[in-house]
Image (cartoon, rainbow, N blue to C red; front, side, top):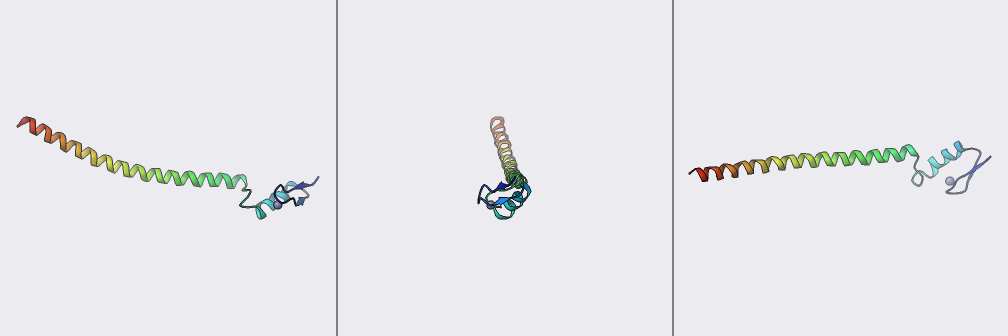
Length: 82
Ligand SMILES: [Zn+2]
C-alpha cells in the first residue's frame, strides 16, 4: 500500500519514506512533532528568561520604593514628635 505526500502528491512505498521526504522537502511547512515541541520549549525558555529579567527589575523597583516609604514614614514620625 503506497502513501502520498499531502503537500506535493509524491508517492512513497511506506510511511517511513514519506516521513523522510517530509523532513527533507517540507521542513518549514510540516515540522515534525519533536520540532514543534522543541519550538515550544524554546519559546517557553525565552519567555521564562524575560520573566526572570522582569522579576529582577521589579525587585529592584520594590527595594527603591520600600526605602522611599521608610524614609517618608521616618520624616512623618520625626515631624509629629517635634
Ligand atoms: Zn512532498
